[in-house]
Image 1: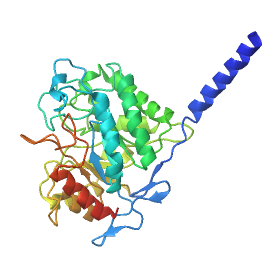
Image 2: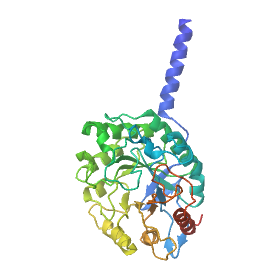
Image 3: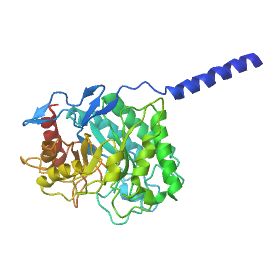
Image 4: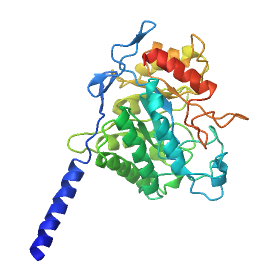
Length: 365
């Protein structure tokens, strides 16, 4: 009996070891070569041009940061009740997100930003008393949040999509007690991505590092490059993730960030003139440390998709990827926006239809 137990123990030990070493057989990989993205060894939108502009190698995206949202504050959770049930349900939110992913992809959406601390569930907010964080105060991972994230990332892998996984948001970083916890959170989240075998994920350390609301200095522009480097240095079997961070609307990244980033994230909030989008791309290329690398807008709340010259078109004209930021504005219905909670993850509003129509036209899907 002792011999049988010993053999069983050795079998289970080796199974666990090798399962951890080679955790999952995944379908989708992302690579960066110069200023282009490759999925499964082929450039995105292979061979595609639109209005004489190259589309191949870009990564069109949308800000979908509330995919794993929950509110741990009992005093504010009632804000997020679904209109049909009168209750908030984080599992329903994730399930409905997943149910719409194939439709987004069908229109040429290859990427979306999802964040472990979400974003403002009202679109824009002054105070943010709700508690939406996949991290504990010490930087450990909350299992319920990560289970929901796994469902989304697994589906993205199945569909050939490339999620941008953001770690921190300026309305929630105060949930971590100190800098040590922030560092632990980066290590834990990046380890988790490795252990689950993802090869299709990009990392955004924090949303808009130059917003004054951040509590922890290491998440601010002067030091955030330390966390980018930390995440890049977490490797498994020779593999590491591509890492960057983003800046608020109209901001140009600092040299310290550009030098260590694998790709550049810009935001078009506050940029109402599409000419300025082109200018942002050109100015970014002049920053010390820039070399051929992808430039992505992964947040822009300007639309005008029926016009010949809008922020989306302007970004593409400068060979930069573009990402929609849509939220439910005052007195609008449930179907509006992708950031306002509860979220309708469908494509039913006029703004969403306009975005996906133009996206499909540009990408040729």
